[in-house]
Length: 465
Image (cartoon, rainbow, N blue to C red; front, side, top):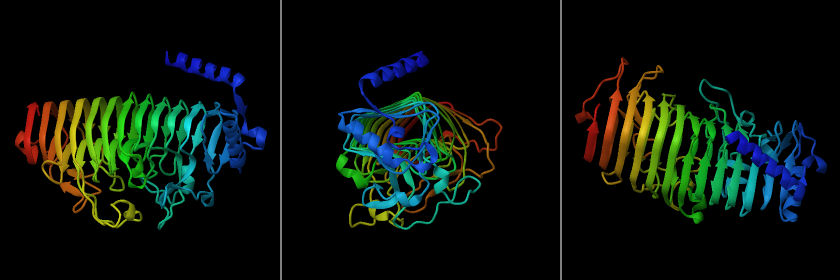
């Protein structure tokens, strides 16, 4: 059925091409040889379609369009034919437009839009971020990052700001050098059926970042990312766009060296009305995470029907194989290249907001560690409901384990001790209904119910451990 719908959609696009304005950048001087920068021709094609009131920019099959920064515009479809590739120019000097406005310390823009509407990116071709070209030396489980101060030239793949009615469908996006698909202040977005395949060794290589956006639907995607696969947040640089809410994520398969599904850590507003359902997570450093580190709040979030497995990676990556992770801690004092943007203007310390009304339903997890719930005060994290959690404890790496990761936070970044099924480090109103922990034959200390809580109030556990 899905194949039929895809073919039907492609037929509709073909029919539209007979009635709408269609431009191939090759008609405007693009070489499509993978060596010549075709950005001028691609931009002209977009501009012509926009001037006509809308149209389709068609990338021909069998060609690789090397390209520097390009601005997308309203009522324009980017259609990547099968075997066509749009690839980022590896020359760092062409990237001079910051992905975060005045904050130039976290990458530049490659393909971007600002204040546009009715943008579609589709087809069975590939958008290639050329990520390894921007990296330093290859290490065992990562790449070194080239030294930077307040300017980082690495390009984000797609930065879409203030866009209404966005569709990204069926394409392959691969090898981003920094964030891959970043929605900032967008309203009404559909991301469906894409393959987002980043190099797992590239740090900061987020998959999809939903930032100050609303009415977003993500479905049927395959995502591999060194950093978070799907992340919801509210960055301080774009706080004028308000809250992030009304988000659904369904039927996705994900692998991450950090956290597969994450909310935070940047959150200066509110995140609410969010649903993650019917997903599979494999070989990730953390499964389902809420990592609140700023004054914003997180509430009314549901994770349901999720199959996941976690494993330990080195400290390069945040996380310690926690299948479920719900936290709110103030972030560390400003000592980072972009620290002036992490805290309210004029301040070097921040505070963290409340995390409440979070549900985890029907979660099947295999991991080297247990779940972690905690906040800086007993009421900061509250009303957390875990219903029907099966946790199979299996050692799969030589890392020592027995550690929970609170980074980035003020003070000690790790909690060390025993491995627990669920570890609560200061929280209130926690209900766990239907918990089964299978310790197998691995070398884990099996702890009783009295060891499941620390500094918690009203923790109710029903089930077997």
